[in-house]
Length: 345
Image (cartoon, rainbow, N blue to C red):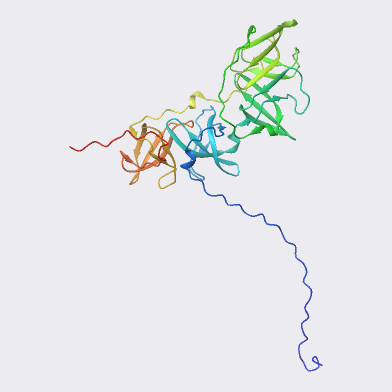
């Protein structure tokens, strides 16, 4: 009847169709770090090791090029972002942080572990063992095993379970070779220690920066069963002086590109603040009264350059005059300043 009168048909509610929903992971917001507070040493805290390379004082800032030094640097990881990490450096003359690639971090052995030359499998009596706290480089991965390389007096390359590796570990003191009281065998760098007295046997270690092994017994054809033990490494195997040397992967250092030390022109006070750039963030401070290169900048700012494992690094410093620079070191973390403005008669 409604239709006959020209009225509109009544609307009929239709059952709603369920729509697919996506689970959204909650975003965990981390509190921003205090770049000065993280520089305070914590006794007994875990440490990491970094191979110097390109770095930045702040994300997106000017790139600091490594001029050729390859010596590992002790650092503490204080922040990360993707493949980048922010590390704190506690040097004798300064404390500051910078950003660099995560793949420049050494791995640290969480526990003592035999190194397998072939990957997952059985170990023989002759073996190389890397001790807890030693630093190694990751060079490969398969299933639950990581291919590592240790470099010290000897070089060792092989496979260890993933779970024995970490990015940080307790402070580790390096110790030289432990004498065993046995006769000493002198070999040249490149001498290969193998799992059997055969030239085709698995390579356990290669002499890199040392010369002496402990002799266990002499065998035929010039082979000697040997031992080696220090704070990072223990090796037992066979060596022959008659075979050609093996390959050693020494850290690359180019003497022609080594950094030229800073030529200082000013002494600044302990605690002087180091900024990432003019009008940037404070990211460090000077420890002890230090000779630095100080150059005038825009009003109220100076360029302060110090030596570092990356070569000279130029920070910004803030102050009214060259002898009155702003300090930002937490109280009690650095020696008191020894710079006193001249008295006025």
